[in-house]
Length: 584
Image (cartoon, rainbow, N blue to C red; front, side):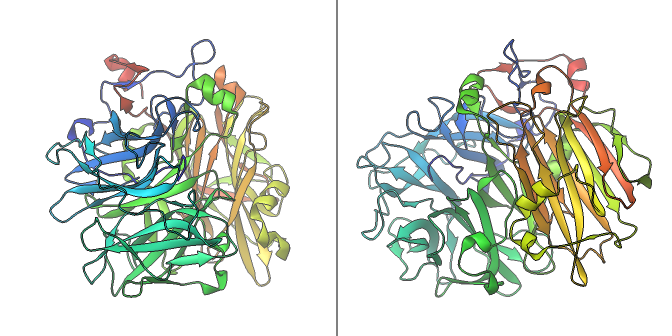
């Protein structure tokens, strides 16, 4: 898709296995020399605009859409950037893997995916914008498969391997998925298209990975939604947290279909059953309908075009997502870079068989340095706000568990609120006292609290049951003009009466705030751009603004070290002293 993240190839490079590598990102700089907002442990190139994944031969590779010409998407034609890692946290930049050089991609190398073929050779399928400005599907292979870094790629002259169909507009055919093998021995891929005005996810089959035929019926279609893109179909175990290879099917296996919707810039998914004989997908929640916008969401915040891969090294399914900027294009140009990837997340199916759980990959914890905590069973009375001191508030990992002693004070839920939880988070913000909640964290706060971002929960009474609302409120995140500062939110699918303890984990990385509620049942990612960060430190608080008391049964916060992200490009320090490294 245009300007959004594509599949990545995941590989492991031993040289980068240590998080204390000597090459580190240069300090951020303001207008006097500091790039405010550049992240410390989220993936991004050293410069310019960017916006997917597979494990092979002991290496993690990440291919991503990259504009080598500037910080904006629409200047020049897009390439594929290429970085390698040993732990999905520390990354080294390589030269671009694909550039627009042939008639079938001369106007841009857009999104796609990578697949390992029998015999161990990786292949990339990607959308090229050809000389007629039409979207076609192409293939590329490594020039030297024995090269552990896969630095050079060859685009065969017989491309495109899938031409633009006659019933699809030239600009509505893109984003080939990771391929999977059916039990008949044929490869399948999913491709997004608009067929006769209907948003469709098409299935193509191939015996040799070169000649592809379209299945008569789409995997999914919807007249209600506009163009959908970046399809991802992958299997999950019905029981347990282990991941599955993309071609897995059969007893004990469910499938997830994820689609990205252009008119909302949100990702949606549905768990269901995939039949590889007919290439059909039957949702586990048919009541949600064909309109993708009524499906479940990976993230209620600022992410798009997510892509998963099976990490055979650790037997897990890992999700990446793109979090673009939400301040002005002028700011992007001034900084010289735009866009980050979220922290890689492990995915698994919840016991209810309908929702996915997500959690930051365990390697992120290797960045933890200073640790602080509150006394166990700290009581937060109405209006309480306790500062978490001792760690850098702009680069931290916070885990907190809240116990709700009583649900009696929960406010009644207006049924209309169920339709728009994001609007509800704005109306019932962190500063609006409630019965049970709001309680949670205040992050990226200035000393006078004029700037702050609130991540919180609020419990509502709904008939004879309860609903848990999770919010990230950006309305006070910055005093700057021209910044998108919405409230984000969603209802958490959890039985509050059974789970009296509600857990929250928040990763803070300068301009990125990623929060995981109720042990990964709901996630919210936000971009924040506070002015105070240019000149002063950010503060962290735990708070309760409900009338009922909330107990903090556990709170731990760590300051995180700066990861090695895309060393070797411009803007990096060659070495640092031992003391500076160990200050984390």
